[in-house]
Image (cartoon, rainbow, N blue to C red; front, side):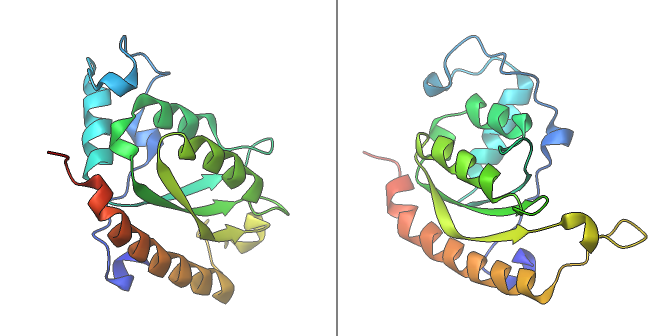
Length: 164
């Protein structure tokens, strides 16, 4: 949907494919002194983005450990960029995981948005071939979320500019 919306050049990143080990850099992320190829690759992907959409499930009322680990790897790359969320789970639709993620992201100067897509009872929306079949409400929510994400990305752009 983000590609069709037209305001974004979408680069999908699957944390499973990125395969970041538990944070293993010898220096604190705020130094930007990365020694591992996986961190350099993650840094480049993250720094290039003007905004993020995190798609996350809810586990035990929180976000997955892989997301928390990926956030911890970096520092400056996240700053002054908006983040939107598509969450899924059971009755809560993953919103508790989003609330926890938002608290952590603000410490990295990520600006989490209110607009989101929450997919409740996700298992009931998967067809026999294993493909997700969203309801109309999910598309409407995504459109509103992406519109707001574009606005925030533009508004925060001056803060991302290099300082002289």
